[in-house]
Image (cartoon, rainbow, N blue to C red; front, side, top):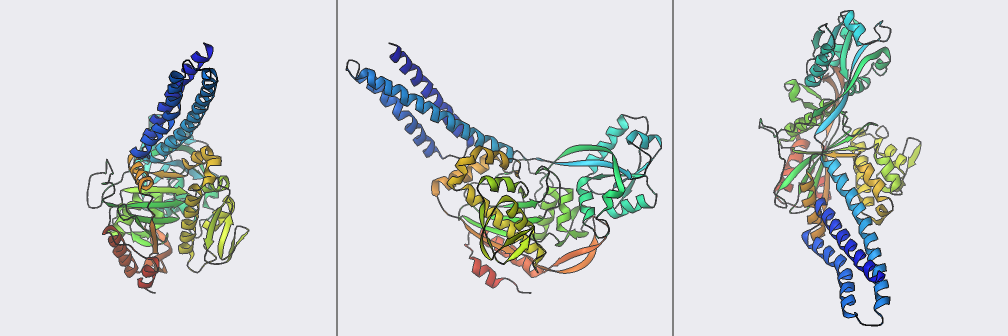
Length: 502
């Protein structure tokens, strides 16, 4: 009697666990209906067969032995269900975190000279300091900070606007202002300018706050924001901006973008075109009314500004973005047991030597490989190629069985390394189509080019190294994007042979 009761208890638990697993699988939105149905049949067939055997063998002398075996199989099935539920939950949670990206973060600080007597913001207010801010940029968050400070004081802040970062710090140096309010992202950009590498050592922060702002993606030539960015699955082509940042903070942190890639994806033909734009490309900025600056500085103002600049450059709508934090790749790569990356030349970087051809890299080695640009005549273009190679290697590694040994920890790392505004439904449709068709992807790459010069930086307010675009390479990139959208299948060697030569 006890065995019979245990059998039915574990049978009920098995059915509950199976349907719970099924519910989690459906929630991921990445498994085709056919596979969900097969999964249901597969996990129900054993308990149903065992139940039938209990009825058929009701008066058979082997009934007790079959019941014990049945209990063991049901318990095993429950354990398998629970393990799979955990892994599916991790997957669902990670996709949710990666696709819930609609904000970007930054640290805003109030700076004074290193030897200034003010110890905090109240000291500065009591001394009636003049505060400098940038005329263009994060005015919403800066105004919010000013209102926050003034709400806790009876003193109204004396604010003076400046057109560029250099104008701002120069005003501080000449005592036209006593303090300035600036984001860490701007200070990072300033440190890259000649003569300002150690400027942060001459100032100190007396007030600091972390703020989040909404990423506002706007369609080109339209004034309304994109509230629901969606595409007609498997019948349309879409473009996504891939921003490669190299920071040790969260992937949501505003930062200069080291790699700027536009992926034109045709879901129907399974063709992907990756167009890389050098970080020093000298391009017009809409926020500066068309004044030019290097592309990487757009990231200081937010990923939406980078998308706006690139959208104008190529004359396309960029409704999607994905940010990749290469520093976060190190732990993922180590958990994968390293990755195999092909190098087109032998070089040294970060204390490591990379040979021409295949290299098996640890996380630290992969980071050094993806960062290096000084060993190559084409500098940033080489770095862009290397970072794309590392991305591809990580994707290949995650597609292998190696991921199963560290699945949960790798998923946890992914949530802090990637950020995208594609919805879970959109990603789910793409994955479901891939699972159903098992169709390969034809990936072709192209990099636009330009010539080096010294020109005025709209953001910095000083001359700096820039890469003036070769217009014919930009037009060629546009042509390739149009071909992918029109359903043409590109060939890498043909793309390279027909590309403009300089």
